[in-house]
Length: 267
Length: 308
Image 1: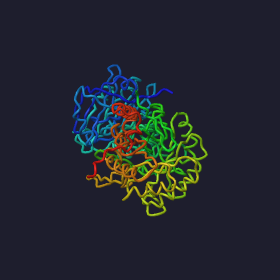
Image 2: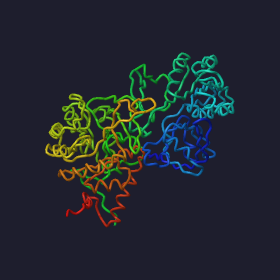
Image 3: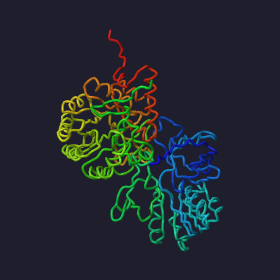
Image 4: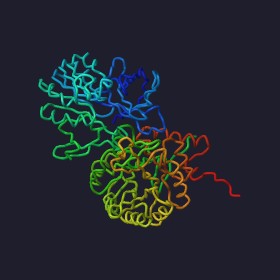
């Protein structure tokens, strides 16, 4: 059997703040740029610091294989991500990847809804990039806390997507949560939906998407240990036929089919 | 000349002293995608229970400075699933397989061991006595010398395989437990398991683990592991697998100096599965530089201050 080497040393190309607390990190690594599918993730060892035991997992936002580049967007939430803001061009990042299962992108043109919240907007760039190449029609609905947190709108517009922004406080775009404004998008013909965002957002949009009866894939967040399947820290309840079983977000996910995901209140 | 890294732990012939610590490398399926499992001196699987277990709610893991708190809750598919689905893969590799077993009552341990005893391709049984005793007050079996010995004796009577007792550090005197399991027939001891720990998110005021408390591992616990291995080395005759915060070859050497025959790597494998190659190479180079041929030559050879 061929063995897989997930270890990579990727030089930093840029690490720039894109809005409050959010940074875009562009890295150079040929194998990852070529092999990573939208929705897959990398697990970063921050500065090889001995006090930070766990790697930090980030969904890959976009790959540019012809330039050997790939990028992630991270939000500063703790010690690890704070330390990552110090990364400078030519620093080398120790990471494992690509990990997990990504979004399934059809080969033929189709009508797609992309639904993202907060940091979860970034992995949808990669989805949009692939869909654009299939001449698919895209409606994009993105939710943020406030205008200061908004990022990535222009990326989707560049792919010709109809883009709708919501903010919790109404300081940019429509006021309210994405779930409150999803109806407008659902009036159109939609065949597939791609969702990535915080768990409360996923819970809020799930009934609407289920009712619309579209093929929908959702990328889930979880606290992870290893990221490659051995520690069983990141399990979620997933339907497998009649049974409900524990599956690993890092291996069987992070992307799951909407109909397979069992939310907390259902168990 | 390259040092000879082979060692023999209670009849288990190991190509080198580095083994996986139970629970940090699953049942070999994931690691076998990365490299030949034969790199390890022995492969210790995640603890197996008699029946399937769901494990604990999430979050099951939280990082602390230099350490890792976990409360996975022995999510297990059960011993029959292990034999049918996992053991065949492990048999394909030239590596001794140590099967860790866990139970929620004293009699579950010999029941699992009896089933395993009939299977080919198992080199030893490691008895995880650190689980909470649900029949009693939820304290671990491993905290009581008598119950620890009772479980080891019961497992020994069901199998001809070597039996390794995995000891918990959450005790007042670990040598009392070690002596008891030795008396009851344990062929080796593995120590330490995780230390009881807890962490709270000060913003939400919620415990960071859904189970509230968990087990602490990682480099932060290494001095405790070293102390306990040294204490146990001086208290019993049976060999020791030293475990607890081994991240580098230097840590492994330190455990061997404290008295360990083999060393278990756990949390480090979660961070980097390939670290095992560096640890083995580092041990070899250390021995070579010090003009030694075998890791056994330095086992327990710490230089103590001379008594006046």
